[in-house]
Image 1 (cartoon, helix red, strand yellow):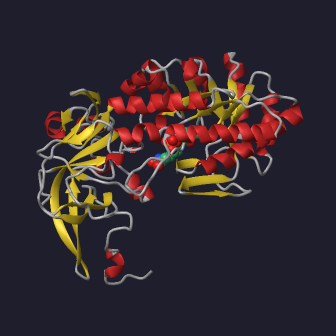
Image 2 (tube, helix red, strand yellow):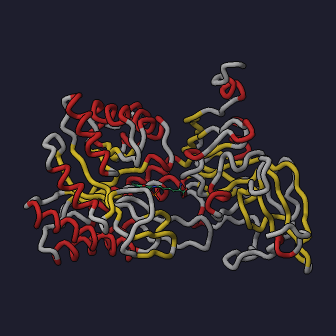
Image 3 (cartoon, helix red, strand yellow):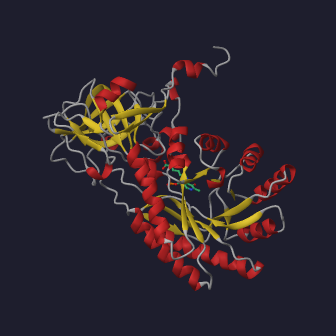
Length: 471
Ligand code: LLP
C-alpha cells in the first residue's frame, strides 16, 4: 500500500465487541485475577496478602508478581483432575510445561507438590534439576536438540525423550551408544490437527516444523527406525495440537488419530505401546472474551475420548500424559507497571483513546505485539471516581507496536505515578522477555500470606554489560 495521510483506517477506533464499559472502573473481574487478589477499600490491589504499592516500593516496577498459592493450587488441581479422570483407564500424569514460566524456586514448588515437568532445552533441564525435580519425572522435548542437550538429558537420567524428527533418531542412537545409555523415547507426531482458541482445523497435511508427519508416512518410518535400534526403547506416541484451546472436541479428534496410529504400530510390529502424550494447550481467560473449561471437566471429556477411541481400535487405554503450561502459570501472574506519559488521541467521530505509557512494554510482554493477544488492566494504586475512558496501555520501547493492553477502560484521571496491574501474565511473559532497547528484565516475585519472595531479581544494566567484552 502506498503511503497516505493517517486517518480513520489507522484509528480502528472503538472498543472491541467483547469489551464492555464497566459499571465500576475500580472493580476486578474475578475470572481473570489470581485467586488471592482483591482491592481494599482505598482501591489498592492486594495480591497474596500484600498491597501492590508496598510491593512496588520494595522491588520496583515493572515486576512480575506470582500468587504462589494460586500457582500451586492450579498445578495440583490439574494433577488430581487427570489422575481421577483416568484412574479407571491406564492412569494419567500431568507434566508442567516449563516453557510457560520456570525458575529454580518454582521448580522447588513443583518438586514439593509431586508434579512432573516437561522441558524443551538444556537450560530448562538445568533449572528444574536445580530445583530438585527428580530426573525420572522429566520429559525432554525440543524440535532441534543439540548433541549437548541430548547428552545432558541422558546423563541426568530423564524419564523420556520425545523425538521430534527422523534425523534425531540416528542422532540419539549415536549419542546413546557413545554414553552407554538406553533412553526411553516417544515420537512426536503431527497429525493434521491445529487448534487455537475457539477454532481447530483438521487437515490431511502438515505445514509446520514440529514432529513426524503421520500423513507422509514419517511416523510409520520413525517407529520402524526406532525399533531397529535396540538401544532406544519406544514407549509411545505424542502429539501437541496447539495452544489456548477451549474445545475438548479438538483433543477428541487428536485422540482418535493417535488411537489409529497406536493400532497401526500394534498391527505392523506386534507392539503394544503403553504411553500416549497429548501435550498441553489448555486455554485460559485473558479477558472476559474467554471462557475456559475447568480441569475436571476437560479431564473427564478427554478420558471419555481415550476410552472410546482405544476401545474402537481394540486396544486397552494407555497411560496418558498432558503438559499444561499456560493454564497453571498464566492466571497466577500479574505484572505491575508505573504510569508515565499519558495522552489523549482523538479518533474522529467523537471518539478518543487514552494512551497510557508504562515503564515496561514489549520486552516484558511480547504477546500483544507477537500474537495480537488481548489483556486487561486495572488502576492498582488508588480508587478513582473518574469515568471510564477507552485506553491503550503502551510501553517505553521505540516501536509503535509496543502495546501491552490494546483495549481497556481505565479511569479518565489515570496519571503519572499511578500503578497499573495487568493480570494473566504468569505464562510466556517472563519466559519470552527480552532486553530490547537495553532494558533490564523485571524481577519475578512470589507472594503468599503477606510475604514477598523474590525468585529472580531485577536485571541491571551491569548485568547487560557483563556480557559485553568491550565494556
Ligand atoms: N507441550 C508441548 C510439546 C508444547 O509444545 C507446549 C507449548 C506445551 C506442552 C505447553 O502448552 P500450553 O499448555 O502452555 O499452551 N508462546 C506462545 C505459546 C507457545 C506454546 C508452545 N508449546 C504463547 O505465548 O501463547
